[in-house]
Length: 309
Image (cartoon, rainbow, N blue to C red):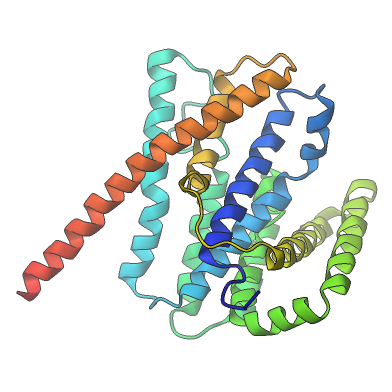
């Protein structure tokens, strides 16, 4: 595989769909803890989320778009518009259908919405630190400080276990040629070393009281997991992706609501039913989001064209 095709846009879409399924399976496990086949998914949540962060950082840098205020808000809008629609859907389910989501706070009503808020913070850090020059070290330090702050504030471990993968994605994209040569020439060493050290770090976190050091050990473990998945992409050739795999963000946004509505009884059939409903729901709202984005951004283009003429 050529370096151009490695971690391409199409590969990223497939990977994000796969990661979304992993995260959903992780959350489904907690509704069906007696199902043997779901037990391995108990431990993959933060790893899959970390790879999402990696791909976000990688994608930001690899596009090499000018870091203007316009591009910043355009990218933020692509996160916030679907999120705002999800807030409306969740709110409607609470107020009109009496769905119990554990909170009526409009900013927290979307299940697992912490990811969106962290992503917004990371995008902002990227914009600020890369606006004038590419400051890799400062980005790493800021994200680590963010993670330690989340740990010290007693936030859920989801807030601090995988954030560093975002900066790793940026660095990976910047030095892609180096990583490509390393992964091609030393693929077996990279693969088995990453698995070995990932296993050691996970064992340390499980059996040792590491305190705040866990912020580092978990994040480094996520980076090793990213290496493993990036290495696997060397063997996946893609030219065109199916439309269905472009719904990973919507799957993340709406799977929590679907799981709340389902009445699980430790049945694999019910799990399969949930997955089908999540995919269909996500596909519908992906189409809605796409239409809204086209209306907003095409209108802006028309206004610019009218001003020029």
